[in-house]
Length: 256
Image 1 (tube, helix red, strand yellow):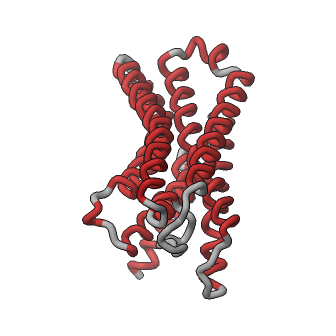
Image 2 (cartoon, one colour):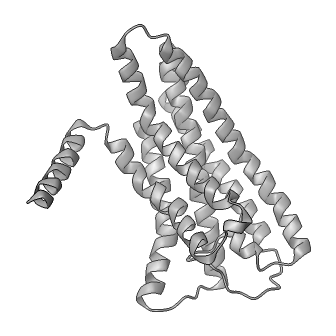
Image 3 (cartoon, helix red, strand yellow):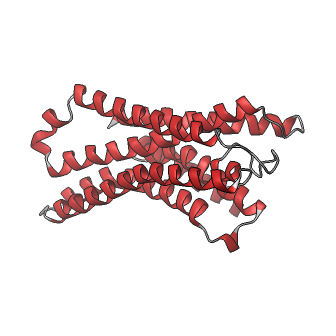
């Protein structure tokens, strides 16, 4: 799990470093421009790190499934070589997905100007600038790519159904607590990431507005990667005690 957490941390760091520094630069220097090649590179890296996060969360779910449902096979199914192969497959599939989407997106002819309504280069915003026929072609490629994410989501749901069935058969309350404490951080990260992405891209068109789209983009591109380390770190008892002390001190000073 710690090996996969390292990979997840790298994907979170990469996705934040892809969008936030350029946005801060534009804000500090009072500008809002990005070059064509810079936009393509930003889109490629962002989709790459987001796709890697989806793949790694799926692999981590398999790790939890084996640990709880097949504990006697952990040494075989989750050996160092197997973990390295799964991580490599996650990064490779993410890169292929990002390369396909970026290449197909920037092969479009932009007929409606070059102004994006976001703080970073995002596929839905680029599609708004493309021609209608090209848009239909790009929509097919996005649907094909989203099937990858949907497959990961179905695998996670199926794994957790098996995990919860196995946990409910544990006779002791201590066993329940240990199993749930192992799964809840991963489940919280998956829920946060999936809910923000789905709400940002599947909301009704009547709810769309420039300010709402901007807020939702920040919500799914910055907030989950920033919160993931905190969610997993709360399993550390010393860190948990430190957070509780900070909260208690803050409430005490507020009361004074």
